Length: 128
Image (cartoon, rainbow, N blue to C red; front, side, top):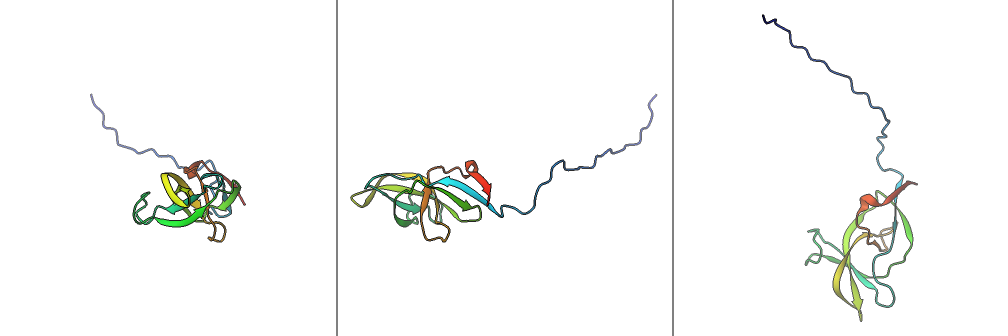
């Protein structure tokens, strides 16, 4: 013989077991090394990927000549980081295969620093 069982719904209250701040990345800095490019008198020309986001197309923007400084920089996570590339200069002419980079324009947006570590998720962060 079958017996009717009234359907019921069991539920549990979700309680977070860890505090997560809601203030975002305020006061956080990326740590990266300005290590992209070539050394010596050769130097490089640095380009942004342009509005289409694709490397080596007609809309790319040249930021001019560049030499790596080799320093470790601490840049705010709220600063602008631009995908781009470098080309090696030979007698002042950019030639050869491009090297993908992430470009940081410095604290005032008036300088150029490039890293060849293009995986920003792997960059070390710290509170400033």
